[in-house]
Picture (cartoon, rainbow, N blue to C red):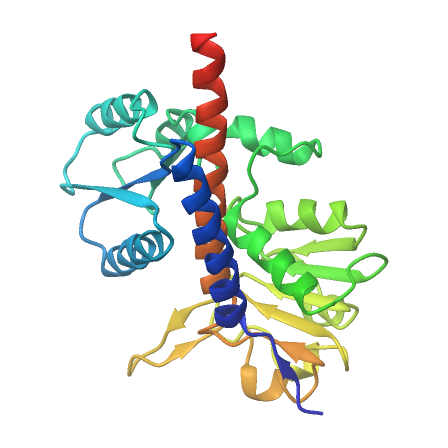
Length: 290
């Protein structure tokens, strides 16, 4: 069996074309979406991600505002900046690029963001709304995965869904979204016994463990759909996922590649959240003046 490649790049391109039209319509109404991106330090991967996000914004007509801070920026200075952006009418959404330097407390920094401007859906208020089935925003990577599945007409309802990884960014919120689509969900992690055996039960297998080629083809149920969230750079600069693509693609019915899979979808969902935040800000401003 040769698996169908789930093309996130093509789908993201289509989504961005729709967002561009939406932004043009909003501007006619006097609504100008703006995304503030804060990066602390000089981590090369973070720098690359920020540059991608700025490029995406430019493509759809969203204004981006970059705040590149020194590695030694204090928590007080960072939170003060966030508080200023919270009340800046030009800023619809705020993104703090993670990970932060070790001396900064990510939880306190995220908590400082106005939930209405929480582009990543990391604030506890938005996580709580997601958990109770009434989300304000959707977390970008999990939302991108759901859109990728649905665009390829992959039914979630009634399917055995296994998520490998329990991070707050991907694993946990994705499990909630899969449940909301009536999937039967198992979340695996470093303490899971017989991981391969659990994975072989999955009709839909999502791997976001951060471990290069953790899941091999022999851990995949024939005909399963495999979503690989991992991006790992090996010696020699070779990029691999958390799934061994060469063996997995021989067993799965559909699979994502490391590049052109989940990544472009994550960035497209960030643009969606920014547009939604602009609409929320406009509604609140109108209420304040009336």
